[in-house]
Length: 381
Picture 1 (cartoon, rainbow, N blue to C red):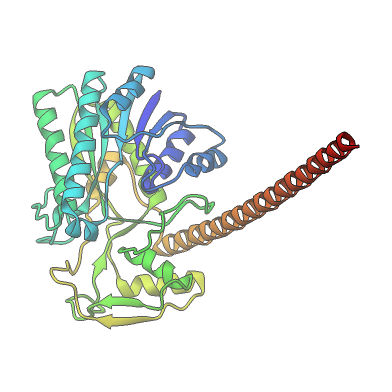
Picture 2 (spheres, one colour):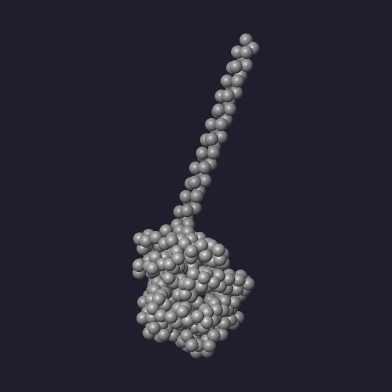
């Protein structure tokens, strides 16, 4: 059975692809590699012993996507991960988020309809809840979106609802992630480190690796046990397994349903710092600064519905997330350093080869000059 995964080389997409391959599915990945690189496919093969079918295309390119569907005319279902996903960035560049996240989704759905592929698992977000009215948050909670990123996720959800309302042959799962973290236990897959990370654990990793001096804790006067904000962190490996359960549900029903994917409990900023310090034996210095405007003090999921309907329950701990995220970051940094050294060696070898070539050309030119002078001498005599 062929499954298409958009953004399949990204953080959650790559881990889900691993689970799909482990469960016997044939996986076609389309990714423009804007948030990943082409080495991810090689690592997936090392982990699973199986290859993916990979196409490097932009999902907004309808013709390119149609070619993929035409080539593999028996695609059964689609996982849709592709899109921009940094909330703070969306506040600074809302047009980028509306354009990319909506265009990719609309293009994908148009092509799916064209090729009669009507089963999709959509990567949504807890950002659709905004500042919740009650905790834990059930799927039925009022939606109070406060960021452009959250608005794009909600808009895509609404598009999918409207599609199902007019054609109930579709089967759709909307998966609302809370805070994905961690990495593959092998250390080969994880979250790409950006230059200026916004999420807590990536920032802590930057500090652990000496790239930042200290963590800025935005406020310690919230109405929470230690005064810092609380979030629901869920291990990406647990998320990947939830996707397999959602796929099984989508394949066996014609329906549209929403599932919260978190752990069902919240961890404060200080909880995360202490857990990271414990499992990695690294001290993380921090300073408390002023709170961010409109910061949500506390958010965590009610995962009862996903547990009951999908038969899924997260198994990994916060310590697992901190350990696996850092393990990936260490290995990734080592790989980058090895690549830089290999590039330096390559450039040095090229320089030496070029110097040798120029020297050989100089010697050949001198030889030819000497031969010409000898001929001229003989002619004179």
